[in-house]
Image 1 (cartoon, rainbow, N blue to C red):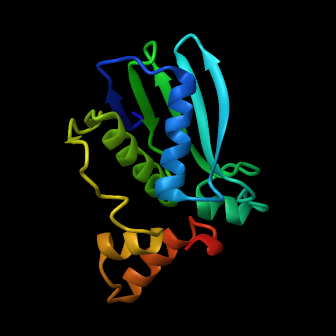
Image 2: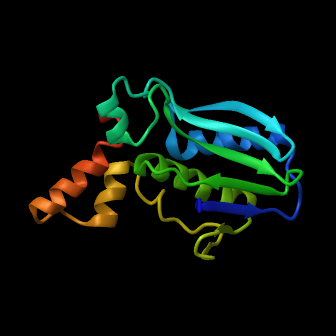
Length: 170
């Protein structure tokens, strides 16, 4: 089962206005060079890809370490569904992507004034609650969440998480 985060809205969002809101969220919590791409539209809604251009793994070892398909930039999808009444995020396996996605989820939750619900657990985050964006960087987030490494096993664990992010974005 995939894990999703959902924001259910009382008023529908226009896709253009929502794209502007996504751009603002990127500028506020992730900053450049993260980019927004309009991806697709289908019978379920409209989808955008928030990516970090130029981060596609160039070899199989790098792709495995980052948990990414070869040739795909680090990033994640955001969907506006149900005629603009639901924002959906599918959680990626890459922890760096998940941190970035969590920052955007929290920013949208606050900006839209609607709770963020995690489908796998039923847990909710209310507008203004912060977990991911309390830390300005991924490394700060890991340090806050995991604490300092105190053993070889801890250092190995940290190294695995750090390998999921491009070195220039640590």
